[in-house]
Image 1 (tube, rainbow over the protein chains, first blue to last red):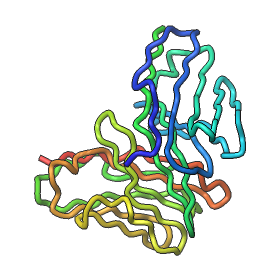
Image 2: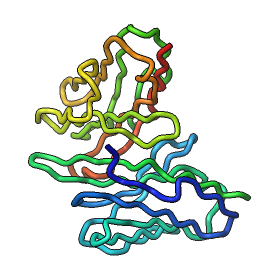
Image 3: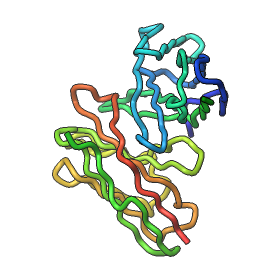
Image 4: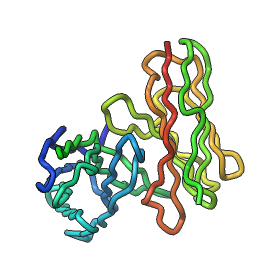
Length: 113
Length: 114
């Protein structure tokens, strides 16, 4: 079963606006990651936030993590048409000898020029 | 350097036939993952190889699915007696020991079972 659940399932905004996507998960995690998938570049890792971090920035991306609520959000500021893609959160769950990464169903973002 | 490559990019097969999907990870990456993605859905974890350790096969949906990784590099995912519900994009990813959580994905193999 999927660990992460993103919402909204789809989001349509105008270029220049901010986009916020949310992710909820169910079990304890080592870290949470966000990935982007589009037809041109496939699935690409965007950013990782550790379980002891609350906020992280990378360029126009801002990720927050609230482990008490088991949720994370991804904010894309000043969106561009090129940001159109599906965005997935992924959680790393540790176990003896390794870890497993579980992906959510994703949010489809449409940025209109 | 070269990224993760997968072959074939597309595979159409008849129900009941066996298929083999290949993944070439980034050179030096110790971990290799297989996922399955159905149309418009997220990624379903299938199997995970880490170095010389026994693979984590907990995501394989049935005993028709198997995978091996030879010499700690190339991996083959085999699906026996394919069914229509096996139709999906099969994605392979690899990661390094230095940064194990950042996975680099291949372009995927689109499998269609008719």
